[in-house]
Length: 114
Length: 112
Image 1 (tube, rainbow over the protein chains, first blue to last red):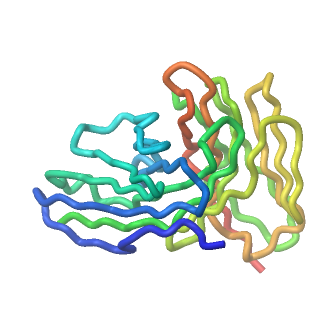
Image 2 (image 1 turned 90 degrees about the vertical axis):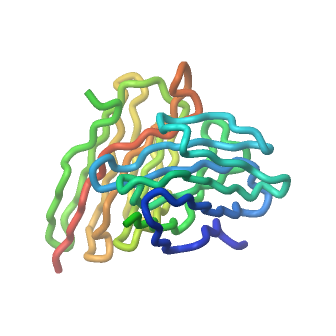
Image 3 (image 1 turned 60 degrees about the vertical axis):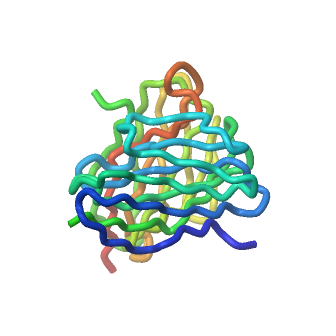
């Protein structure tokens, strides 16, 4: 079965712009979660969506937002980009995001803000 | 103090050696994941544990819920095992509920 697909793989944006990243989960998976990875902070949880609803949120400013569509595909948006937003953004999908379920990660989108 | 502490941060081994990576966490968890990340960024989930021990090929993962500690072992290490290994507990309650938190990762290099 197809894995988790993230697009685009690479992105270069200018400070102040906004960006939208996409994540298509494994077929049948209804939970999509997003993570930011930087050399300084490591991996950090951004948010999780289930059935088109944000169920969980990490400690990020309101410039970071997301949504989930009825087909479980998810997008995340970062507005007013800052240099510090340069990172690898990863999404992961699971059946329902409950307890001891496994996660499948996408390959990530590498965002560079200049 | 971080919620998740991994050790060691860097590990260099010769091919064939037995490897252990440790993870201690402070929050109540519903499960703990061990992740592998190769250069280029892709993450693979190696194990998901909620109790006891799991084995997959040369990899073994254990967890002690009472002591809030997990270990990842690699028997007969091989250069292709060179990667970053990340411990990721999933919160079970309070503000951590449903969230994955992450250790800082262990960079493993296995020399032939």
